[in-house]
Image (tube, rainbow, N blue to C red):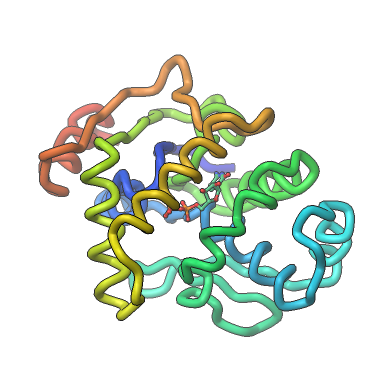
Length: 222
Ligand code: CDP
């Protein structure tokens, strides 16, 4: 069982993944990108032409599919049946459809179970997502809730998409993000809300280094 669990929850493009990776490096911990899990299940279901609203069929598909989540050279790696899908799961089409899996209680409980197994297999973990401090690891050692204003988050996501050559306008990126924020905040299970004991950090206008320093200050020597 992990002796140190740090959770980072927050909305899209608030900086969770970047900060989780850096914190994990600093603390000699494993890094878990739980959004990649929701994305991988969505991609696998789409590839197998399973209707995304059919959570029972997706759950059955999960029984017969090998999902592997790891970290390679500091980057989160996701494999489905031996195929590396780390890049593919970031496609806007997956982003647009991930809410089906994310709002299905049956699938969420299966993914939370996988997240806890991951924690059980490592000494120290930094995990990021939407429900890590509230549902998956309510007893985590330190919980963060990272936010940033929506215009800045849309700009950050647009920069990532531009770097990949995705032909999407910032207005579309901002709209898609607002839709996903709303679905993340309003679902009945695993909704995006800060844990009562979460440390709130607004990263608007802060550099990555500044947020990292703030987090390390809260974590203290471990
Ligand atoms: O990187 P970005 O914030 O855009 O998304 P992500 O962290 O890869 O997560 C993709 C989607 O998975 C989110 O919009 C959530 O709906 C869902 N998710 C979730 O429901 N619970 C988590 N612990 C992590 C992600």
